[in-house]
Length: 233
Image (cartoon, rainbow, N blue to C red; front, side, top):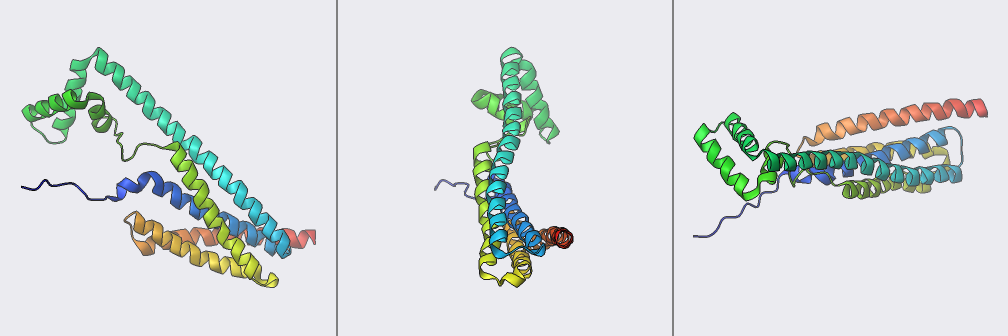
């Protein structure tokens, strides 16, 4: 008899990097495009628009990396604190911890005798791992990884931010805002669809919600740029 292996790939397995990647690319595209549109709407020339966009790319990528690292590190600290407390409780009150694990399995539908057997066997094999998974909800799949989140966020932000800068280089100087806005709408729709597909959600809905908020952001910065550009001019 051949040995069966569990080879399914579930969407939750991607959650560690998918969130950071989608957020980074979306922010890079939206924030840089909005900045470029606002500066262009103020009447600035192509060199000024490019400098502003490049500065936004660098600053945004570093900000995303720092923000993700700090945020996910805080989550990691909380996980480590919970694991340390659980380790201490397992050493000091093993019977109470065994009973706690048993009650968890009873609440999930096992009868008392079977729940006790499962709790005993899992405790003998890996007591801390069992409590981490079934009591605290901490597992290898969803555990926090600060460095991974920071690097993915910075890289994807930069990749998203490059798109409007390329459009600025190629677009006529008199129509920079229009070309950037149009290309960004298309990019957001593609990005939203890909993110939704990778996460197992509806493609159309994912594309629509990302595109809507991106369009609103560009409209707001274009209005600010136009108003202050006229005022300064």
